[in-house]
Amino acid sequence: MNRAFRNRKERNIIHTFVWVVSLISLMLLVWWRFIYAIEFPRSWDQVDFTLALDRFDLFAMQPHFPGYPYFILGGIWLNKWISNPAQALATWNSLLMLLAMYPMYIISRSFLSKTFSIVAVALIQSMVFINVLTVQPMSEASAVAILWWYMWSLQQAFTKHSTVWIVISSFFFSLLLGVRLSYLPFGIGFVLLLIHRKNKFTTKEYLSFLMTQVLVAAVFQFIWVGGLAVSEGGVAAFLQLALGFSQGHFEEWGGTAVSASTSFFERLSHLFLNNIVWTGLGGQHLFVLISLFTLIIYLSMKRLKRPIWIREVSWFGWAFASMAFIYFLWALFAQNIDKPRHILPLPGMVLLGFLWIGLKKQSDGPKRMLLLLAVIISVQSVVSYINMKEANDPAAVYQLIDYLEDESEPLIVYTWEETRVMSFNRVSFEHEQIYTYSTFLADLRYYENHRVYLTEQVVEGFAKQGIPIEDQVKRIQTFHSSTLYDPVYHDIVLYEFLK
Image (cartoon, rainbow, N blue to C red; front, side, top):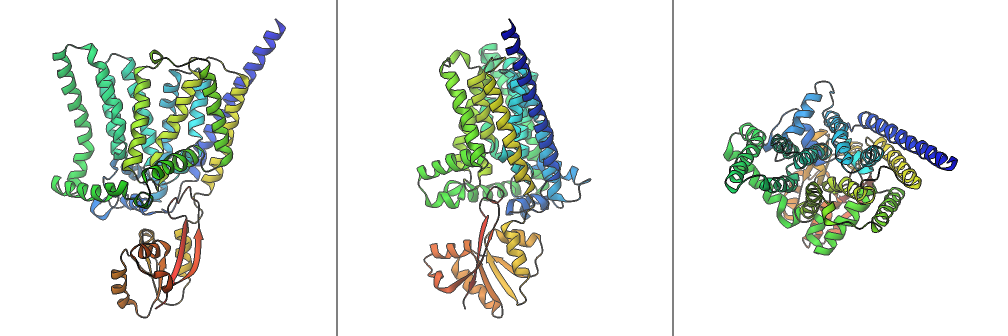
């Protein structure tokens, strides 16, 4: 009796400890996100979003197609109180991620105890990569926050008979696409919801129900699509923009540098090992990755003792798994794998899936499991803090700008995407985006009295065109920044062209 009492008391103490760790971590993360929001856009896409708060113009790529109107509207609203546009957008991310805690908890609560549900929210919210993207003026974090609301509405619609929940799901799906159109594959969840309702109707009634729900969903989508079309001069102009963007974005596996020169299996391994595992789960931190893999292995081993039966998986469970799998394929075939941010929805969904596998319907848990979860949440929170604190450290492109601003002689620098950041900062020196060697030679005639610089991307591009450029350039300087914040342009090498 005394031993049972001691065990129960010890378990209650550990439960309380895990609760406290989870809640303190969540409060600190929310605070850090707000105070470390990025002040200066670090990339082409970030400049696109930042400029849109001053003048929304898709033709001027402010932002680029499809406009992300609900994300921009949130930024415009916050920009009334936060004068820095980039900071306003990052703060909008933080606000939406804060609100997303509720649907995360409700979804977790459907198969976990109260303690494990709080832990699940803290575990997902403390993930390093989620926090790194939350403090940036990019739409991914906002989209993931709304994605959790969309999945919550699907869960409610699968478990409740009211048609109102289907309409609510349509509404959240329209918000999701109005923030990030590339999250379209998550629509498979809505499709499965409509299929699930088939048994509630006769064939004739179901056709009527289906037409009505599809029409409602289309109306919700038309709100933001129609608004964009009007803002850009009509349907014809909007379609022209859409076709131009799609052609450039989806050709050659999303138009990436990696995809253009690698095989399918190399692309697959890069997406899975680098983007999802190393960056998405581990936050490019070995100890975080080892901690999470320990948890995943532990949860998997627990489930081996209790095999999963098909009947255990609910309709929402199948929808959840289907959405994750379809989006993985979408990221593989249609997204830019040079940029790990495109996989942001998957790490959190993977973790929640393993929690379901190992802890489903358990009101309690082994003490070592609870302590392991507390350790992982603490480690992720500390590493997230360290990385968020570095959010406003100078990016490699800003280091390049500072270096060139110190030059006393007239100069011209030829770049790829770096020129967008240079234009945003209104630098004092000449700069141009260049792709072909013939255009470069023609342009040089206008800069005979200038020192001519090239970035590494330009030099490598010329080399791929068969130009013996190595004999014509001299390496001058290399600039480094965080691979988490600058996945493509974390290393910028500056060369001087020898006339």
